Image (cartoon, rainbow, N blue to C red; front, side, top):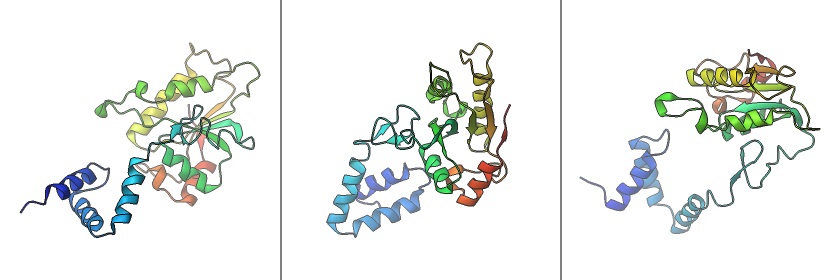
Length: 211
């Protein structure tokens, strides 16, 4: 027995979402089939308007409603410490710990040759530009590589370190700041956005120099 075309279309749409299998897609579809039309309308409007008014912060590349996000625009944040993360969800997870008072830089992924994702697909050059000293700009003291402890995360961390420490780099202050990696608390293969506040807090406090 085949589902009606409208139902099948929505099931297939849900299946394209990460972490959603066929059974979950079917349950979600039939749940929506029985909710009031007003709720369906709200749901559709929320999805349709997801990207409306959302931009990437011109400094850190985090999602924002303004050209400069609230974190980058906060004068109370430590602008000399940059925490590099894979995606915007990692920023929100780290903020929940209350242990970090610096700013962020979002790469929007990691280097993954199997998925045809190279350095040029990420916001790596934007990070390098932020590390350059320009006039009276505040110098960077520390770069925290808060990438997930996976093979791809480690490979990306190594690539970033080589780029930053490159002798041909125009950064005149590249020897003045340290590069650290999240320490104990994050297990190998773990994911920053799914770690609890205590684990992330300990990882930030126990970060190590990364050379």
